[in-house]
Image: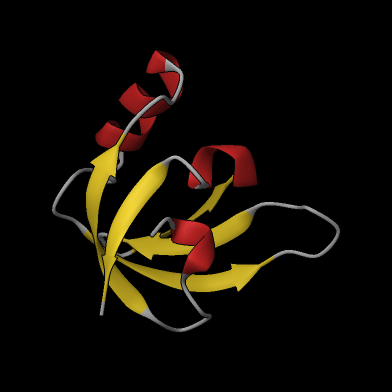
Length: 75
């Protein structure tokens, strides 16, 4: 499953980050979004806006197109 499939308030571990532009992937790694990290779905913004996730104590907005490419193991 990908991040977009998580319900609001649910947590999961990142399983794989693939097919994301290398600059975006590098930035995610710098702020602690990497394989094995625990994330929490905070909110999906309306009208196709970004999703807000919490990872490593930070709340981060990620474009839906990038969030689809981050695979997680649901809890």
